[in-house]
Length: 161
Image (cartoon, rainbow, N blue to C red; front, side, top):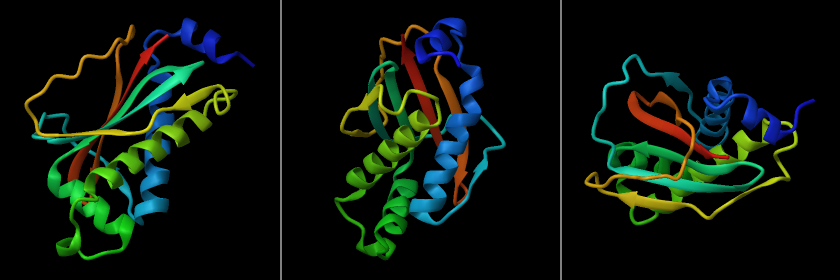
């Protein structure tokens, strides 16, 4: 079995990790939110004004992010907390941060030897759409686009080896 650092060195694009990221996200949304993610039919950029990020450090360094619009983030919070949509308030950032954290944790646990060798940062959540994220990644990001209750979300992993 190859070590994580050998896997990172062998394939700079990490395209083979897309199915792992896809599975990790689907499992978290099914378990924590009680819903199925489906593949998005388009990669067209839409206004995703809520971004949650979790840093990875250790054998794998980088940033995993979950982006969506405010309506999707509010629905995720409602489902996660089991409260009505009209009762959701300031906890949206915490809920989306936790969803991102769980996807990152589930993803790293799917790579042999990485569970104990990679730490996660506390989540950071940004609201608003007028910003640029610059990551010190040295390989192209991998990204999946999914539909959450017919609303688009994007989950990406930027890796710095």
